[in-house]
Image 1 (cartoon, one colour):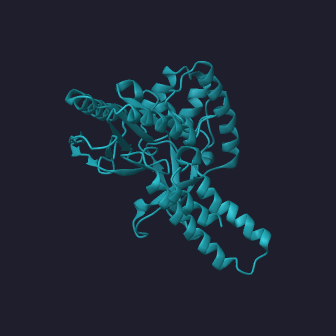
Image 2: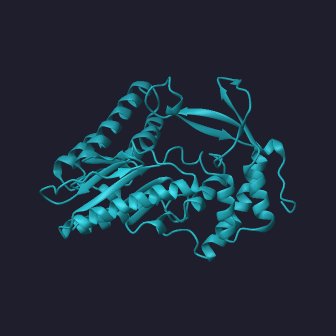
Image 3: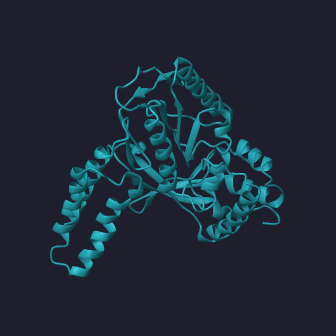
Length: 336
């Protein structure tokens, strides 16, 4: 580390594709998991720990970023966001919210621009040289059912499933909130921002922020998948007039409900839709467990239920804990 070099074998990754959703014949429906050298991971832990101490001591990371940070989680992000939205709804203040989706966020980070930002944040000397060696000249091959493809060079991005990669990505997008005037919420590459709509000028201001984000992406080598980005108008009672927002030359679709960090948000901030989704998912998992564990001991069944079913019911429950009797009954059916 003193010399700022890294063995070449530490930069060789076996990529295992893990299916996400959609058609299994399409490569984009798989998440690439990089299996890297264990010795390298140990040194990454040491370096990451010291960098985090530096970032915390100097208060460098944005307060709006809740991903990959100590004492932060999806639940803290959702609690802060939903609390703010509910407060505005109770005050009868309409809000237009943009739910944005980065396109291959971790894979498109330009190395030179990232290293420049690290230097700006006070990460210099041997550590910066070691990180540069960690990022450049990486190679990877895809492993499927015991067969490995030919190796290919990795020209950009931070390696996924490494210890240091997520922290480097946070630092690369750390200045994103500074380019907009809207309220921003970040969880790693999940980006959401919103603006109270009291007049037509407020919609123009939100569109101006979308334009600023587009310029920021062009400057720092990132891309938004505009086709997956959505606009939701949150209001109480009668819906207000919609406005066609654009990003990267595409009109953003206006939706009444959308997924954010595993929670179904609706334009009325009602949780009935999310409770139904939770019920269907947990009920399906419960049926699968019953069929396959019919002859197993009761203790094993209990472990399977707590691990597979109850974890689904309890995820971010402080955010969406239902108060309507019909929603509570749906969840109680699963418990019983």
